[in-house]
Length: 138
Image (spheres, rainbow, N blue to C red):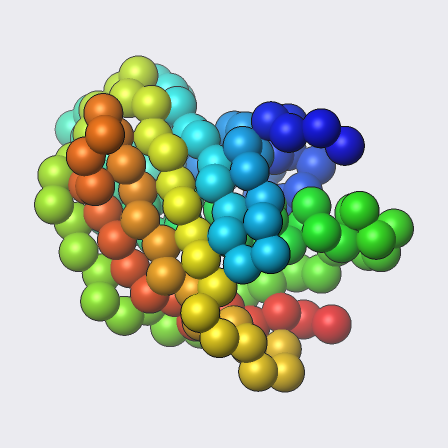
């Protein structure tokens, strides 16, 4: 498979709860994806993305990277769950038509749990960041 590629087949979330459009890069511990905020986004509050949307974008970016690896290995893509959110910071919000780049790096994995750090960029500015603990249902 050649990147960039649609993220749709690598994550369990689908419209209207899909917050990753394109998988741009997948490296051993790093995934980069994009998302364009649409007018029908279910996590808009007064035409601005809600705080929950940023966390979901990071989680779905991690899921897309994982899904890509499992697909490459001809294995079933497991379902993951957010177990904890730490150090969440929202520096700026974005509106409809904003193009976001999400970058997630796996910092540690033990058993079925991974700790990832992620950030979301808009116009070359970091607008949100968080550390997520993600559990994978094998």
